[in-house]
Amino acid sequence: MSSLSFALFLSLLSLLFPFISSSNSTTTTIPLSLFNTKNPSQDFYEKLTHLASISLARANYIKKSQDSPVSTTPLYPQSYGGYSITLSFGTPPQKIPFIMDTGSNFVWFPCTTRYLCSNCTVSSATSQSIPTFIPKSSSSARVLGCLNPKCGWIHSNNPKSRCQDCESPTNCKQVCPPYIILYGSGSTGGLALVDTLDLSNKKVPNFLVGCSLFSSKQPAGIAGLGRGLSSLPSQLGVKKFSYCLVSHRFDDTGKSSNLVLDFNASGEKTSDLSYTPLQKNPVVSEKNALSVYYYVSLRKITVGGKKVKIPYKYLTTDSNGDGGSIVDSGTTFTFMNRGVFEPVLDAFVKQVKGIPRSESIEIITGLRPCFNISRQETVSLPELKFHYKGGAEMTLPIANYFSFAGETDVICLTMVTDSSFGPELSTGPSIILGNFQMQNYLVEFDLKNEKFGFKQQMCK
Image 1 (cartoon, rainbow, N blue to C red):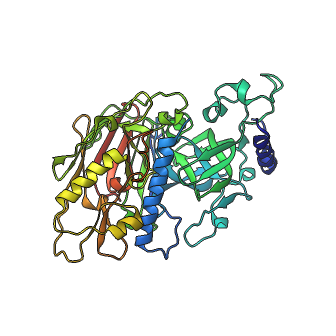
Image 2: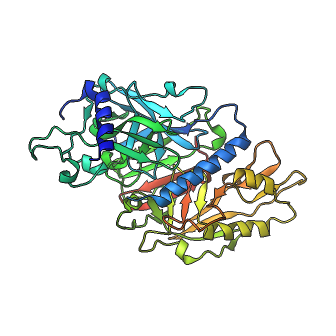
């Protein structure tokens, strides 16, 4: 361990010292909502620019990344651009909000009364009002030991490399080393705990969760729903999970849908869902993050019924793990590599005739194309459709791929790409399907049968 890491370890340990010690229904439903971090006075024009910016930051993070019962939980939409759930940890239970993220595999919460968060503005609040977990108030909270196999879920699998201060394999008082996680728009760090997760219909003891003592631009904890061992579905033994994303029109209103965790999924398909196989994740040295994502096989994109010419290399992963498509609830606006986005943009520009583009709004928001419809009595926009392996087709409603830019009479395509200047950001997935495009869609991740399903419906 480096001197810097050791100093960080000591400081974290001193904060946590007060509580350090050795260490059947078939579904659960959890409310799901949108999470807000922006000032309520912010107009929609600023919000659109903000969402475009964080979507690009998220894409850069993803693309550069290296290394029984069912439970239902409310899912709330927020102007932060993501969706939040509330989970209860500890004995007695403490309720903490989390951003739902299918693009990561670790669960962590803001922790202790000394939690520090920089650049973590929340609506109508200061960073001091961010809900935090208090470990010393939980009789079941334990700091994770270094030799505990769960420590290998977040650090090296080799105990000898991560537990160098242990006297012997049978006599070790060293705790699991501190973690630091970098996201697209922020970071967090702390120590790993095990504690009881209290769901509506079951208690799960010894659940691995991060106790973050400091964060930057991460105003709430993250509930990772990715493929890794430390993710929420993996730790719970979930066979299938699904959610329906309410419209971003209801940001911060309290309107919610549900995240449904199914512990005993059968092989039967859910009624009316279109399915496409989940693809095998690429295995690439020093790119372990690729193993976390949910890959799907996007075969083609059509605009106005016409196939967009996209080079094949973007639609499939290569030996370096580059290319292909993933589904990511933590991304707001869908990201496309420049080689995919430019043909899609050209298709819209060619088919939207008689409506002028607004380049000034494009420059400010980072979104393209934007059209000024102020002088139009009626507006007809081309249909956007994603075609997946197995014949599944996702026909997006216009509200899922065009949005007004603030108070203006300008509408913009709500998808992003990397800068037109400099080399293309070619590493990692080429297409990242974001939550804005999946508003009012029921989506299902069938982990037992390795399928991704979806259908359009009004989410309640």
